[in-house]
Image 1 (cartoon, helix red, strand yellow):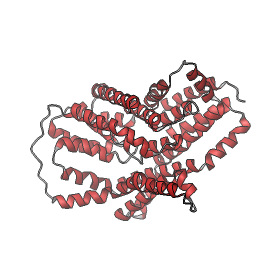
Image 2 (cartoon, helix red, strand yellow):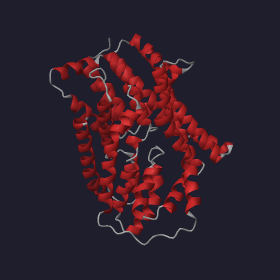
Image 3 (cartoon, rainbow, N blue to C red):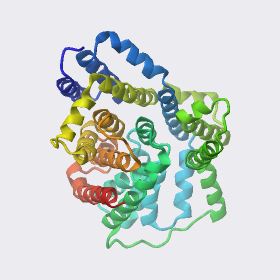
Length: 424
């Protein structure tokens, strides 16, 4: 066994994690090093190579890691090929209402889950919000809040993919329970942003609606194709195979999460076909460290899970829950929210929260949805959240001024998630 008991080892490891995050070390490196520190402190050293090997050859781990890489590559290619410009500009010309444009544009660009990506929508929001006469802190809130309303129901979000893979709960089942929360987030965001704000006169549209609609659909088609595959085609195919007991070569890979991987690369192929990038443009994203950092973080999530289980930590927490010392609801809400807030990373928050809770309860769509949304909302208001920092800096306002809008939005959304957990 390791040098320390599991509880002490976890505390020391998470202190190490905190230092790494404070020093702004990449989340991928942080998660993997934290897993190794925990292993050295709590697991027989002879077992460590075995755990790393089993994690590396696990089919679900492989599928999630490559799917994450595919999503990040798609995000970067959207930017490098300028297809994201077609997406945002066409939408702005289709919708003439400045309030709707200001709220929809960040959400649409939010389909590209890149770190600090709120900067991509900030100039567009700035021009529309200026027409509405919004203050800088209100502009920052609009850009930040609406960019992040999409992710709890976005089937190719890296965090949602990893959450589903870790817990064994299908992505559509998690999404179904998140829909009411997202609806409330949108309503609350709209009321806080535009209450008693008048719309200016309609903008002139220099190009025909049909041409702009076609431009939008073409630009959106890679994302739409991926979404349809993840939440439509592949789940239906799974149901048919399960119902008929069919067996075909490769279906074991299909069951291990390779459906998301295939969907991601089908969407990526569509993007390449419509954008026709040069070799230089196509190669540029591969030089971006962010792609590999997030991909490495996906692997780190699984490694941390397996080492935490091997340390015996779940057994200790199970005893605490059984004795009534610790509440399951506390582990599903406060702990994930705090971790999301402290790490400034929903992927890190979910991974660590899952590692703590795994073995205590049997995960269901109900518990997984609460775990996910708690982490996500905690991350959303974190001062270490890159989108938050970049947005406040772009609009030249302090985080404190934005918080007066963010905190009420957080509380209402979090309360909604709890109500859904207890009532549905």
